[in-house]
Image (spheres, rainbow, N blue to C red):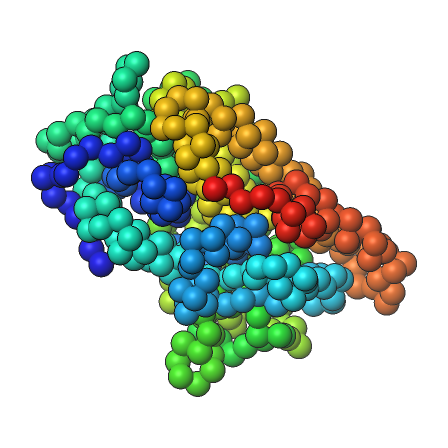
Length: 423
């Protein structure tokens, strides 16, 4: 399943995709479904399954279902049953069914990011051919004229000509930097994250996505991402620890974290449903990352060049929507190219639809994501235990926060069910 790194390429494709992450590979599969030739160019010499856990909400899973990928996702991920919120004292404050358990036509998945990328890569190579993904091709810039684009590479690789270029090259996007050279540094939220995975006994429903605590006292996100990893029923459980920090960590997804920098905050989190510090200590690897985003761009498309996914709209990971919005970008763009032809007009249509939609998600993730449920409870209870939650905040108020985010992010149940396919 190794992508090619050969310089001897067949005829030039119509769409040049820069980056073989979740967005780039979903775009390749979607263009193939639409009958549009494309090729993916990836900077790293070899694609390896990196990262930790992510959640795929029903609006993203709908798109992967249209690509015929549900069986592959079931083989590596966990169908999430519920989203559940606790205080830092382990007290339940809000519980909501997820995916098909909530009446959606599509499931929600908790999955290792590397497993998702592997599924997408395997399907891309199988459907588009072994030369559809070219590794060791680090883009240095893109030029365009009335007839098309030329992508330039480092290390002596010949330039490649196509009709349009799509920057799917993540938070350090070369194309975004080319289009917005004076953008400046990422916007730091004041929060650092530590992330890891551990093999652990199933907790709660065995398919629960948990958020607990609040930033003033420490916050955790915990959910299983693989079932029965040891033949004895234990799961691979993903966790994220968040605390306020004056200085941001380095913006490097592979940066190692240290237990002493955050574990003391959670040392007393021994709940009847989970021993949190024991889970953290059981992790083989811990990664540290700042919670950052970028201010939304006024447009992604410049002629025959455009952006997609994290290259277009990096967002703080507060609503399980980073990968999901990249998947939706890919499907909307493929649909526009199918309807309008492979050219600048289709990229403009994509831009017109997706820039305002993702701007709303980026800004809502800053101020009122689903995690705001925890903020409301913490602030109203002043961080204290309570005997009667209804005296602190009503379930209707908490449900309204969740429902508003579904609407903003594009997965309100009725609207999602009634929407026509992007392709």
